[in-house]
Every structure is written in C-alpha cells, then in structure tokens.
Amino acid sequence: MNLFEKMQARAAEGRPIRVGMIGAGKFGTMFLAQALRLKGIHIAGIVDLKPETARSNMAYVGWPDESFSARDLDMAVRSGTTCVSDDWETLIAHPGIEIIIECTGNPMAAVSHCLRAFDHGKHVINVTVEADAFAGPGLGARARSAGVIYSMAYGDQPALACDLVDWARACGFNVVAAGRGHKWLPHYRRSTPDTVWDFWGLTREQAERGRLNPKMFNAFLDGSKPAIESAAIANCCGLDAPAGGLAFPPGGIDDVPNLMRPASEGGVLERKGMVEVASCLTADGLPIPHDIRKGVWVCFEGDTEYLRNCFEEYKVVTDESGRYMCNYKRWHLIGLELGISVASVGLRGEPTGVATEFRADVVSVAKRTLCKGEVLDGEGGYTVSGGLRPADVSVREGYLPLGLAHDVRLVNDVGEGEPVRWRDVVIDTNSDAYRLRRNIEAGLVQSTAA
Image 1 (cartoon, rainbow, N blue to C red):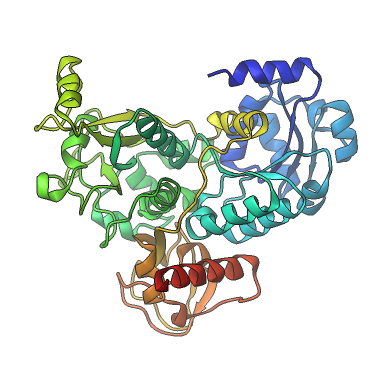
Image 2 (cartoon, rainbow, N blue to C red):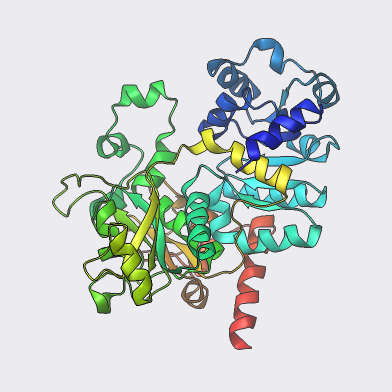
C-alpha cells in the first residue's frame, strides 16, 4: 500500500527505476500516457519496428519532443530523456536498464526478447500474454534460474485476477473459481478483423480515432483472448481449465456466486478450483445489467457455519445457499495501470503474477474448414481462434498452441471447429519459442509419468 511513496523516494534520491520498452502500440502508449507523471520511473529506451510510430504515439499522449530526443541510451540515462530506436538487442544489453517491458503483442518475438533479457540479468514484465499462455511456466523457470523476475502485467486482466485470488487466499478463504468477464455469443468464434467492430460496439470511426488494431481486438471477441488470459490465470494460481473449454455462462456480478460453483450444487463448474469467463449477454444477445465484461472476479466459499453467518451479518451477496460469494474489480485500465508492475518489480522485487505450473493451454481451433496449403494467421485473424483446454489433454492430443499458429502452413485439411495439431503444420523448429514450448511439454510428460 505504499508503492507511490517508495517511487517518490527513488525520484528524490535521483535513481529512478530505469525501464526499456519493446513495442509502442496501444498498451505501450497507454503506459506512456501515465509514465511522465511517475517521477520514480524513467523510460530510458523505447524500441519499435517503426520508430516513427513510437514517436508519433509519444507526441499524441503529451510527451514534449525534447523528452525523447536522446541520440543513444547513454545520453538517455545521463539526461533523464528517452532514446527511440528499432534496436531491441542494444536496449536489452544496456547496463543502465533494470526492467524490460515486452509489449509487442508478437508471441514468437516476445519469447526471444524475454530469454535474451534474462541472459543479460534484466527483469521482465511481459505484456504479451499470448506468449505467457503457451510458455509462461518455462519463462518463469528460466527467470528464476537467471536470478531475475518475470512478471505478468498489472492492468491486464490476468494479473488483476491473480491479485484477487491472492487476496482471498491470504484472507484464509478457499478459492472455488476465478476469471474475467467477456461479451460472448457462440457465433463470435467465427469473427474476423472485417466483422469485429460490428460486434464490438464501436464504429469504425471510433476505432480509427483510438488507433485500435482490428486483429488484436478481434482476438478478444472471437474467444481467443479470454482463453489466453484464463490459461495465464490458471497457470499462475494453480487452477484448472474446463475439459471442454470455457462455457461463458451469462450473468452479472451478483450472479457470479450462483454460477461459479460446482454443477453438483447448481453452478457450471466441473469441480472446485477452476477458471471460467462470465458473459455479459444473454443467450438471446440482450445485455445483462451490472456486468463484469471489463473486469475480473474471484469466487470463494464460507466453508464453516461461522463464515456463512459472517456473510449474512455483513449483508454480502452470496449464492442462494449462503455458502459462496465473490469479490471483483469491475474495470481494468490496461496500460494505464502498468506502473504497479514496474513499482512492484523494481521496488519490492515481486512479480504481479507469474506462472508456476502448466495446468492450462490454448489450442488452435479452425474458424472454418481449412485446406492444405493455407497459412495460419494466429489469434484474432481469419483462420483460427483459441480454445482453452487442460494442458495434459493438449499435450497428449498433440494440439498446436495458438501462440505458435502464426505464419505456419497447413499440410492437412482441418474441419471447422476442429483443433489443429502439430502434425497438421510445417513449423520452424529452430525458434526460441518452439524449443521452449517443446521443453515445457517434455517436462509435463515426465512429471505425469513419474
């Protein structure tokens, strides 16, 4: 509860937390909008494939031109300004940088960036949750081996949900389920970047004004991002994925205690200890009041008569039995909240969520009938969406993780709604991401056999 005070102290001492950021898209730009207000944080370097876009976004959110005019990182560190370039390797290697923020949104690149940062003794805050979904346990293990911190990004829903789970457990409650909200109807699974704004609730003009990426936002709409973020929550909090994928039960905040309890007690869960996503729409597409679409929740139980009496005495909303209740954060503010992660890692030496187990995975599911020779275009695109599955099932069945379904060519036909398997694609086996993922799978197989 004193991160701001600690940041102020670092600023007063003249040694702010020095950060390098890779990727200056929507998330990164939102953090940039707040970073100038946080005197205990110095963004010394920003790398983007298009440096001119990064500079444009910095100016767009109020950065004076002179604040990002440093010709190199040495000058940036000396003067407290920012160097903008396209050279991520130099950024990661620079001794003045303490923390690397990875926010490219490219999972293949993100894995390489994280691994190189660990090699150089840098902490990493990984905004690219797509990489965390298929490689988070491996990235966390590699960071620990290197003696550095790997963290999910506060502001994104997984870290916020993990925070709520930690709160519940630190209070002594048994966590029954955790997750996020979403706007969901089954036909959204087939949405493409051409249809996303019609379903999302924005006009094309609003989307262009906000410089919003239709493919990225479509990854939310088509169920890929909810699956990705649910996997991240499960692997961080030791929760399980539903065997058949997310059910997206419709309900508002006050419905969560009834929904997110075991099916044997009237809910939708296979058992206690699961991840799930609540939809803000009824099956007929009508909006549900007081929804949790943009937020996160944790459902926990009063497993003694005394706790249930306390729930009743303090007039909290529970399920109809009085046993289950939830806590929630109704909104998440994306990059506007990232300063919490930077401060937590830089000042406390604590991640804001990190995968410690491989319990859930996101597999590539065909949006339509796919033909041999087609090239998969990853989450949010025209070919596949993400489906949440238990990790042991995914590995046993040979499913292709969604995070690796980018620019890979099919060698077999795949029917609509069917998972894509490793055997169905030709893939670069020399990439950091492929090797790390295969190591994670081998570790799961060995642990299961033992």
